[in-house]
Image (cartoon, rainbow over all chains, first blue to last red):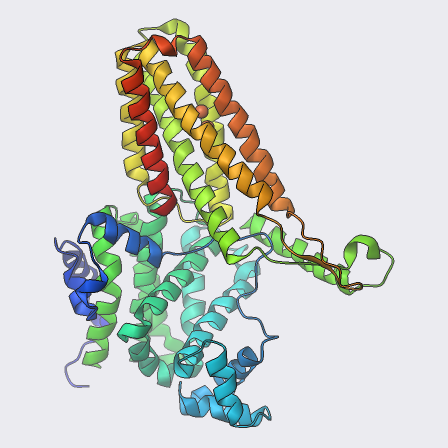
Length: 286
Length: 229
Ligand SMILES: [Fe+2]
Ligand SMILES: [Fe+2]
């Protein structure tokens, strides 16, 4: 690992980040993602704003909402089984799913029929996604404890910590999962799920913002969370104490900055590039 | 949050009741369907655009009040009454946006500046122009609410299946019925504002046609944008 510094050791990290946000040409982000520019036919700000808001696609939550994971579906049960029993050993791979199938008494043909038929064209991504969804669902178990905490920031700290610790069983495979998530074909879905996570966390923590702060908070939170995950990759401390300490400090900083991302341009630049940029650079260093 | 966990409790009790014995079977054995993706997407837009619209209305009256209150103290109570109703509308949609977890319009800062500017500008032009502005805005908003009401009434049935007989009686869920009541109440209040504006010489504004049509066009453009961005 030589001289590589992990993200949590960089004291000025978020200043670098601020610089990146100020870039006048957001489009280089597309280049960065290796997305063909032709997918973005207009260079106009409007187009960028619309694509930004799609990333935040978060539909109306009915009083009577569908559960996040429907355990009645066979493929969800298979993924759950694979995740809890085989992923820690074999990682996010076809092998884990095949083992789960055999374990649950399905034939190997089931692998093809269950996954290809249900629109899961990529079993590995399905498995990663299942990890993300079930971890996000687990946050609802914290609601009772949250009601004992007073400030929004203390609730945020609790939720972010819980969510990060949810990665502990698969920590040896987190690196591969992150690399997979930022492949161009998976990136939009991964970013959307990251924002779903920060939206859930903000909501459970009692966020009531009605204006631009709604975006700033969720973005700040997504950043801290991703920084936390990257920190975790190299954290050898007992119970990831180092990571927890890091995210706690970052959340305090954000509170004292009063959610500093406040202009539309900053936000647009931020969303499209920073997170993926961050993950890529850190993974390469590792 | 509190509201959310209360809803969870309500849901659990529904499920519990449905697995229970027969004594309450008339209402308890019904399995309630979910809103479809399209219905959720529609509600999402409704709340976002109405929140932005009421924010705009709130700021327009704010601007008019600032511009007119010392020049025309006689208008203060009328403006104040309408402004307070707009504040109530705005707060109601703010709460819905938080509780139903809808993304607010990204252009919120722009709506604030634009609406305040429109209110101040028409207020400075005088009473008639301010009232013509109200008339134009309320015409568009009233029509918009009516259109929402039509969709909420006609296209929001979800499956309600009786688990014993298997009979499906599509019904409009309670939360949608509440929304219908809210929208129709607000629509009526907007149309009252429109009448008030006409009673107070909105038609005396010069150039009336240009002013009202320009404002209507702006409002429609803003609605289109706020639904999406
Ligand atoms: Fe209103
Ligand atoms: Fe009104």
